Length: 280
Picture 1 (cartoon, one colour):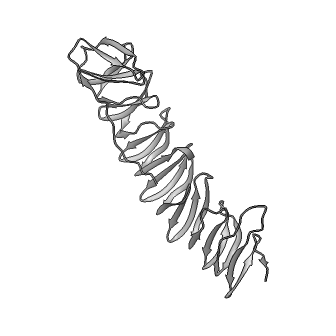
Picture 2: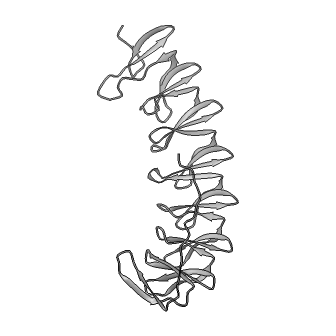
Picture 3: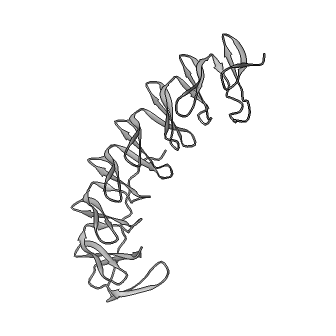
């Protein structure tokens, strides 16, 4: 599981003593413009160069025009069309038109990644979208975003929960642990009871079972009141918890009649996917 670790790769600015500087873009094309008015400039990235003048930072375009006047304590290179900006010790974001899409207001921010950026406010984390709207408001002490599944993992008061990219709570922030046990599958626990969250399906097996086995199977084995049974990924009961012991089903294919071996009242026998005894 990925937790959010904050670090900043600030723009590296080079001192200039000459009347002009040779700057090339990533394709090797030379851009030449007078830079003696600036104390420092940075590399030419994503069509823009950082600058420092009178102790403040801004941006130049490839024609040498100041698209952002020197006014910030610090700026970073553009990433996914946005640069981080620091003013009055508060962080915000600037787009490539030079417009502040997020007025500096946060203690810290991360770069945008696939449309979302982490923000820190009052020592708590949240997420904003490219319009500056707080998708995940920051009451969380930890947060991370799983881009391929479009889901946020959040922690508050040592309890984990999950939110979709519309800001809707999928799993409430009440669980002591959320541990990966299979691909895109998390084991949730609370008060010595367990459930599962299938991140790709955005479905939950309720946290009410004493034990869980085979979390990667279409039907998950669960134990309740000392007895084993099966539920699907939505938590629907497929076979009630009534067996003292059980083995996984041999096959979940629709075309075949898979079976499981179970023990009840000291006797072992096989059952089909309808929970019916088969064979002798």
